[in-house]
Length: 187
Image 1: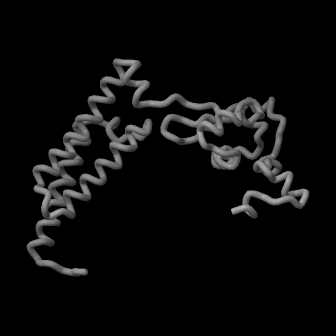
Image 2: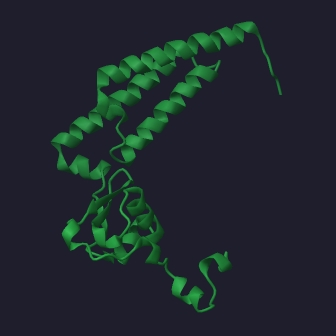
Image 3: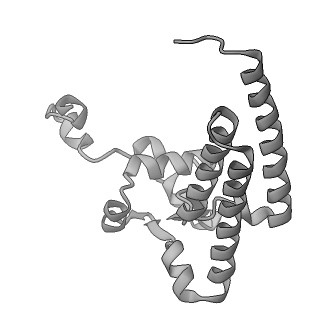
């Protein structure tokens, strides 16, 4: 393991880092806010790829700076093109963006949708708690958004017949209350 190679190597890293960072900031300003918006899985992949490319440009002494800057520009251009096409074509939009999924509605969990989305009751209850709501009866719906976040839509306050979130039990909790094995015991 080398702790230090040379002052020239450090200088190259410094120069490449500053130049690539400035280029990335300029490209992002030119391409607009949508480039880094995490509106769907495709956007997240592009954001991660930009970070990975920037790291490669900064740390690799084998990758010319011009190639790294071109790679950053190419990722941003492709993101722009896909977003542009997605606005104009339902087929492209459907390919790169999923639909929101309803997980909880009017006091009831939707187990088939939750299973398909790989979301459990605890995740939904945590999202409700994070939104500042204390009772499931105060929730009209919980939606898994296209970016993976959970949106909690409050019910009309006057219609809230409350089930406290403290009373919500994860699957299998009734069995544990009777002395049976829990999922935690099986792990």
